[in-house]
Length: 415
Image (cartoon, rainbow, N blue to C red; front, side, top):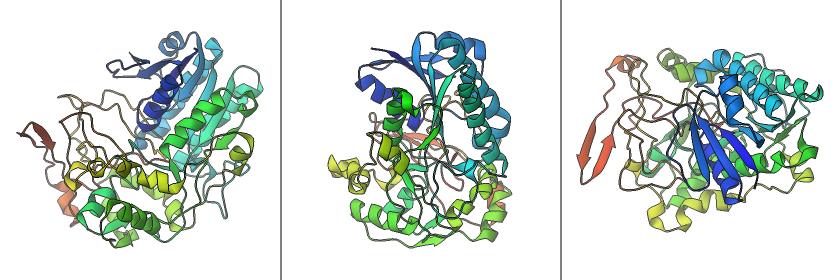
């Protein structure tokens, strides 16, 4: 079968690579850190922002799947060079460039979002996202490359932990019966894109010539508010409903002083302050992928048995420390996303080795080791200055890592 190169191995990149391998394709994954090979997938360690190195890695490929992004607060500086490198690799190799995008480029919009809306964002992240696609589209129209972009709303599903608004910020508290806080209005309708549907769309458009040259929205179920989604997750988990409340703007403003992530989220708060609804009918009328039914999206973790629902202490991502200055060795160089951006960083490794085990709603473990994170309540902002503690202890063969920060385990969001 043909060679596909996947850039990044976060939730979206990993799901895409594995789906391609299941379909019988040869798959090469590019991350800065590299990984051990797995069936049907070759892992290559290099900097995807290096055009020369990437050009060599993609020779012979029929498609390049761009599923990577820098850390959230470094988009403006690092995403344009990465995008330029992808375009250069597509031009020299002749491979189709399939970009995974999000909805930031539109900016605030009244009514459902369609692909016909202009990329009119005024914030820095929205402008960068719009510029990435504009560069690829322009080269496509010049006949220099073949390109297509697939845009998703906030991710949730298997493998989405740290960055997902319905994962690390919801599931640990829900399973403990504690209130859940969210950005904006918890009752505003919001579109949620299921991660496996993202992967299926990326794979499908790579082989559909009539898809090239424009952007498409990933097939997405009708919008539901954060409160409605939390209630459904609680019912599927067999727990009692929990209160869901919006994070007051004043609290967000104070907390953002100490959290780079929260400072960046202020730009896209509009997505949660008002209805944020995605129209994916154009894709569904042209191609075969359809959004997975909601009961299957939410019910997937429990179908294999009660043990597939992680215990409350098993959730919360990989124990990542949110405090600046207390860093782990992020060997991916920001190349592992999964996306709504909000893209996860599945390739991130602690200097002591990869964290394994339960990774949040819909994730599966990989052996007896797991990483656990405590999720304390929001306290006085000065608590943010307290020394972040990472403690790894061995107990019955289990490694525990505890990170004291808020929001717990959060990284780039998944849109």
